[in-house]
Structure formats: C-alpha cells, structure tokens
Image 1: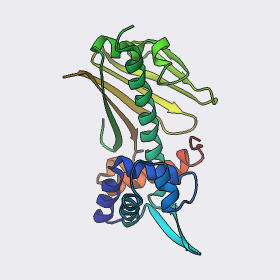
Image 2: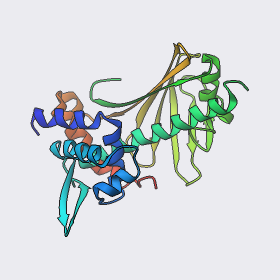
Image 3: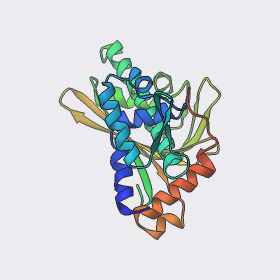
Image 4: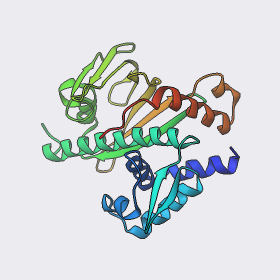
Length: 109
Length: 139
C-alpha cells in the first residue's frame, strides 16, 4: 500500500459521516438513496462522501440495472475500516446516552 | 498510547460538574445507564472490570490508571477480539465538563515495532481478519 493510499484511508476515516456510511455498509450493499435515508445530509453529500471512500479503496460500486450499489471493499483495508467504524459508532451511541442522562437530570441528582 | 496503536477518539461536553461526570463513569449504577447494561468496576489500579450487555456480549478487563475526577484508563477485551485500551479524560469546559474518550487497539508485534503506517495498517488488517472478522456487527 502506498503512503498516498494510507493518507487517503485515514483522511477518509476522519469524518463522522463517512464512518457512519461505512458502518451502514457493514449490513450489506446499499444505494445512495438508501444510505442517505438514515442521515441528515443530502444525496449529493452522500455521493461525495462515497467518492472519497471509493478513492481510499474502502468502498466500491457496482451497477445493477438502473441502480448503483455500494459495498465495502472485501479484504484490503475494508475489514479494519469496518471494525474501526464499529468502535467509533459504539462510543457515539454511549456518549449520546450519557448526554441524555445529564440532560434528563438537569445535571443534578 | 504506545507506538502502533490506532486511536478512535470521541468528545462530548456535558452540563454537569467534574464530580457528577466522574460518578457517572465510575459508579456502577450510573455507568449502567450508558456504558453497558451491567457494570462491575473495582476502582483501583489492577482492579477488575466487567461489562455485560443484554444481548449476551461481555467485556472483561482491568483498571490501568485512576486519577480521581481526572482520568480513568482501562483495558478490556470483547470475545475473541484483541484487547483494547480505553482512556477517559475529564476536563473543565465553559458550560460544564468535557469528557474525552479514546479507544486504542494495539497492533501486534512484530508489525508495530517495524515502524511506519504501512506496517501498522498491515498489522491492523491481520488483527481484523483473525480477531475481528468473526465478530458480529451490531444490529
């Protein structure tokens, strides 16, 4: 793997939306519309993020009729990326619960 | 964090005092409301930690460092995955307390000691294929 590629991988993983997209793709192949549905961003934004992930070799696309399906690139950096995305997603969930906990209690007990 | 570890970092500002955030982190009853469904934490260096989830998942580990209301470092392991280190750092923030969480997964020797991102990435890849690939993805 070239240093350029390594840089592209970490740059790609540095964005929360892209990590979320990778996490979503761990559940299977998906279209841009399908991926955008679960996010507060536009299809165009999702498309751009997928292009960045594709450039880093983390996801790939395949045309199926009129649709384009995206999936995590098997092997390569796909597996570690998936695993790192998962750890990040877990903390996102836990910290969201913690924030809610304090919001609900008004910071006092 | 030592050489060859890949950190995953998250931060959140909570409208609460350092004391309140520390307790939410270290008192089982409070930690059970956000970290895991069942928490056992022996709050001292070398103390045992157990996190259980309703789905059956369990994580076991040890406390590595405790600095009251400032820092907690644990190492934990989930199933057959490689052990990872989680560091919680509390800091004062304008509106309350900032909690920074960094989970670092060590790349294995000899790859980690070989130096360079290329080797570390390769080590991560090997780890993921051997330890992480069989793990289930959260539904």
